[in-house]
Length: 218
Image 1 (cartoon, rainbow, N blue to C red):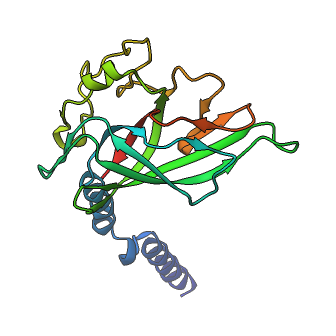
Image 2: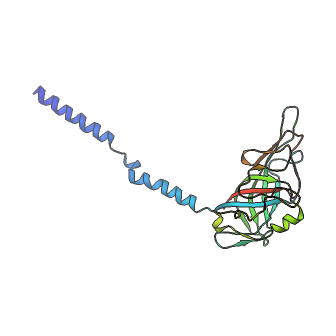
């Protein structure tokens, strides 16, 4: 009798352990597999590429504060995934994320910028997400005219085609392309993460016409 009871007890324990190892219906393998697919679909629906813009006004970290509007314009036309043509000169609007002048308490001055909207000539706004990837001085007028041709983005996966933008302007000023990184040709200025410019000078100053390369998601 005792032997039979012990046998039944072992069987019950084995069934309990087996049930505990079964996957919970809430995290069924089939349901879990659909989660990444949904996230992937959301990601692939967004188009990504590069915009080259130039500032339309000078910026000075001593005179700016977080939230102030920043304006630039496209230096080459683009064609979006839905076939819409956005011409050169179209406004690209952003804002200051941080602005700090060097002081007794801070050894560096900083200026953070994010561009988040394209404003077409009819006033229609298109939201974008962007990070500044590179910056360079205003090129001379001759090189600017060479950059005025429209560039097809082919769905924005391929940005400015290789070789479409010259490496140097007529005066030796760097011209940005998709391979450009950081600050080129501007002394005492670095580009940190999230579009934050850093300088050991008294302030960060970006003159009107400064080129910026934006890594953009639409």
